[in-house]
Length: 164
Image (cartoon, helix red, strand yellow):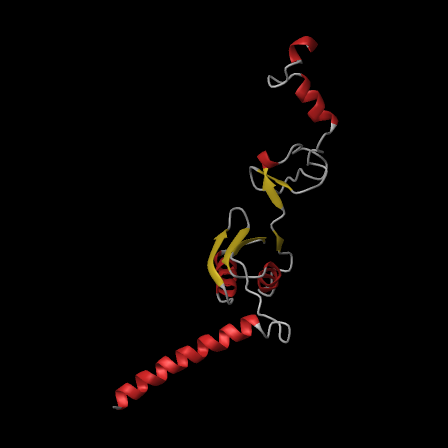
């Protein structure tokens, strides 16, 4: 009979938990704030990595964070990639706490994503191959003069042959 009572308590506790969750979700939302769920994301950090010790120190510090699922360190690109339920600012602070004060969020975008990669704010000699710095000057303005000139000689423009 003791086993049956234990099973009954388990069933009752499950029902009470369900009832408690149901009521809190539908009736007590305005009284207490709901817990926000973190979103799974990938955070890229630019940090100078000199040696195996620096790499190991950064990897251990970031992988011990709550919510970090995977940590990749690319010494050649000076890049740390963290995937998981983490806050980018907290990851940056954790990397800086290892002694790397010049760490910053990854400031680069692929070369192909920018309209003007050699604009004054975008070109960076220290950028990894195939990347340029994010900047407003490098982005094309929608409806700008370049788009209008390019559409004059486009194959998709039915009036292009009259211009040529």
